[in-house]
Length: 132
Image (cartoon, rainbow, N blue to C red; front, side):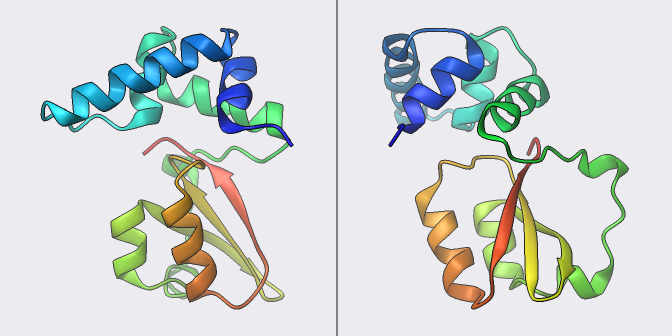
């Protein structure tokens, strides 16, 4: 099984060691008060926009990428996930069809987010990439 570091490295076009260096630098920045998210930090380090990084990552993994600014989300879809979970983990439900809830996330590597969404939904679903 491939790990997140290797996925990011391949998608961005750097070595896994560079991803590890960036991760340590991001952790240090957060410890010093930075509010920048990991994906945003990595995108900046790779000289990409967050959108470009997520598009590359989605393409590499075979997941969809969605531009939320161009997506109309019906209220009944938004109500499929508790507001607390949506805000806490920056998750947006974007479609619901035949018991499948698709959500857009800014950081697909957040295991707490994945667990919370799975816990809240007892149906199958999918994850889409979108800048936060």
